[in-house]
Length: 387
Image (cartoon, rainbow, N blue to C red):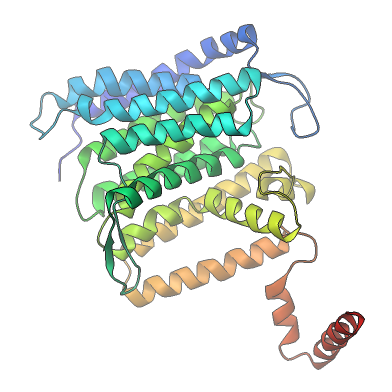
């Protein structure tokens, strides 16, 4: 295990300070170029807010990884240089961030935005080792290795999915930045201590990204003075999608499940949104106000209270991911079953599936309640007789 030396600590401090210094500059620039979120029916802000704050995070990450980190790692012996390791990832992230920045100013069509994300993902697939080229079926299943064509599609689909999932939860001040910090901290711990094949450069990249977001966080926490914008949400989502690939391609079930659980909040919110819209007969791409943070606000939570609840859920997912790495197979299965059961109760309690869509609650009411069972059967017979 490679130790963290003082040089790496200085790099993290540099990334943090760069983000703190660059954010006010980016805020001023956002007003000048028109990267401003104006109030409308879909947005929560009541006054025009500067967007594209993620540019500060991206620039901090870029300078730290292309200049500071190569200087720090150059004093040690590694098979390849950190600069060559990270350059293609930064280039892919540049494409995605630029796409988000243009969208913040001109509001691109969904297809144009998707094209930018796909281009960034293709760069990563073509020039790095961050590829979805193998997968271990959890709990005793086989280890699968994929050919070049399937690897390409799985890699691109995974990066697109995580990027869009992070972007979807960007609805409240500090929500994405806070959840991302929690997820990245957990990813760093897992990559350094638990992955079967230690990739020290992966851990360094994760913590540099985390330090860059932490520097931006005070400006973005409620009441925010600048938003991440699509430039920031897409950049963070893209980087998390890329960095989490190393866990998916390992030969142990725990390593495969860990990144999925760590990213539980955005993945769960996205999956539920897709199912909810399909059940309602609406297009998957159609926006609504039924996401987790929207439902919390509708229940009377304050802006900050809703964000803290989501932080708490993200911490629970992260703790379960860490516990999974030290649990037996049976313990891991019980953890996952308990997590799924608890999250279903939470989702139905907030009616995130949609109004009156509470299958688990209905099943629990059905068990041991003859009156409810008879009433349900009567409603079912009446409904079918009409057809």
